[in-house]
Image 1 (tube, helix red, strand yellow):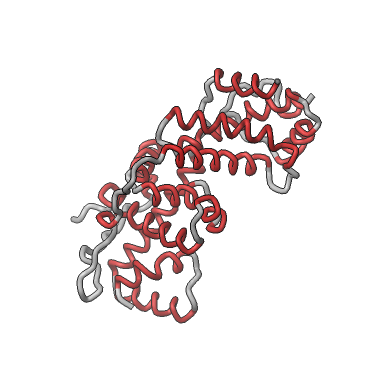
Image 2 (spheres, rainbow over the protein chains, first blue to last red):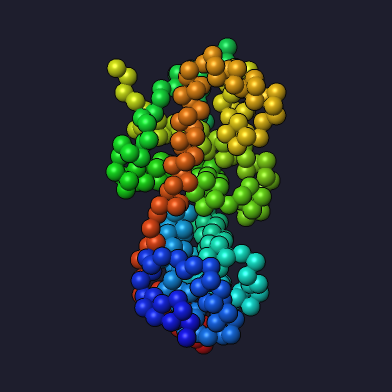
Length: 215
Length: 77
């Protein structure tokens, strides 16, 4: 029955997210233990969840493993989900958490690359060493959208891991400071410091591609 | 307030409107005298915007059917 409510042909993981009312009906069917409802959940949301795990994890196999773990974790936790958030939001948090767990499990580099080389430098009098040049207006109008996404993603992937993760969680996945701090086991103040440095570094990496040419 | 303080200490809070009125006034005073920091501020804001659009714009990915079937098989048990 719930298949009819959400879509009997929810085989395409790229379909639009259901409206809140559809989500509520889906949740009711999930709570009633209808396995067809869980299949609908998997087919409706897993495409977006895979995009999340791929953004956080560089390795494709890890991203798929994290998605699988997230779906199974959601299945096991359904009874405890009271609907206090949207189903899509709840699933997003689970996928982020599973991706972070996978990231921790794979972390084997004892020392991280320093970020200092990517940050702005200053003269002894406090002036910035190389004056900032304006960027082209509406940067995303200047480049093809997919090209711009690839550029931004590529620059984010060049950030040291601890900075890259904070930037992804805060600016891309849009988690708040407190939740990011909790997930990473660091203080909210540390999140703010890392986020700012990550943004400065990302800005520096994007600058050569987006700055206006000097005439 | 000099460029270093503007960029390293106050920029993020300025963008998120978390500075005190006095700090914001000092920040604005510096901007009025420093075109480089104006450019820096704008490109920093654009950086944040581009990051956010990356999440919103990324389409859902195609999930391998084998993965879907594996999950469904476990949850049917």
